[in-house]
Image (cartoon, rainbow, N blue to C red; front, side, top):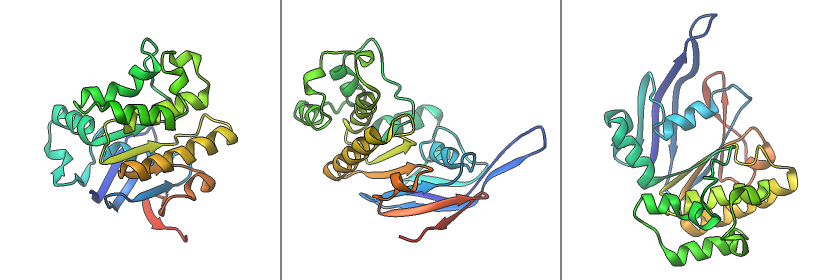
Length: 221
């Protein structure tokens, strides 16, 4: 469902070109979960942005299903993200003027797939049913991140891309968010590609890859 083939990405720096990704290959099957690990600055977020079509590789190809992202216009890539992807970042990116319920349903509404029964199920699973009429600033950090995860899963995407989703949380809140994320992924049936620097966060994922010096390597289970 996701295939990256011979991906190369280089950025200019004052010291000269920096090759962040070097002939990277990655595949992710439908319903599979994969943790992408590596040190800060190793290119993990760059790879995630390429998978989402937020950026394009210098060389190589990114396919989501049968669609080659570089063959699509920026408008069509945005439509593909809206219709098929869920995105969760370290920053919550909630809309402060919308209630918890409206934040939760925003992405599904934009995709034309709002489902009242699934919304109620998510609110309950997220532990936010009693806060549905509140606003993001009235929630704790852990609650806001749970809401961000729920928003991404509300349209029932084919693939969820998560970039350090617990990076702003303390360990207890992070564990709660990770347990919830895994449960909702199992219930929705979507695939998950998670970027993290933490072995503890990566542990529940089915597969583990390490990005080092621009190359991917398998990690022992």
